[in-house]
Length: 202
Image (cartoon, rainbow, N blue to C red; front, side, top):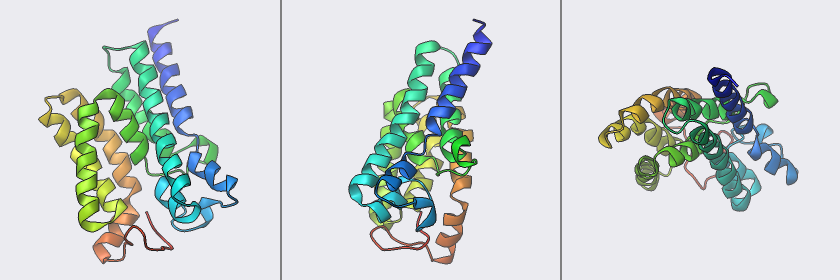
């Protein structure tokens, strides 16, 4: 099989797996369409608010796992080339713009975290520290998510991983774009804190 075709198939497979809407599935198991409640987002935060902590944590882990699976496959096929880094963007696009839901998906944070955890556990850990610190200080999931995402290129650079710094830029751009409504609410002082019922949420 030509290398270019194999790479294309890996990227397509990564996208299709990442497009599986686990939050929607888990919500429906409990009789809730998470697209119709709260923020309408299929991610872990909205699932947690409307289906409980267990479903929310399960969504988080499954969304991270599908990002990790895509990158792990890419590393197995091409451990030294550019394919694993490109796969990060493929899995983020899969989660944020899933073909199964008319390209209306989640925000990509957990999926990106899983992908980077495979590429560089140190980078994933540093980004998680940023998330925890911001979350502890302000208790807003969206702000913590955007902060950790925006920090990725700088954190990768600090680890002397210019390749990951470049790979993180398009993925971070997609994730931050998906958080644009949250950013507007943050600037307006209207974003809800975690643990408080919300019609909009993150």
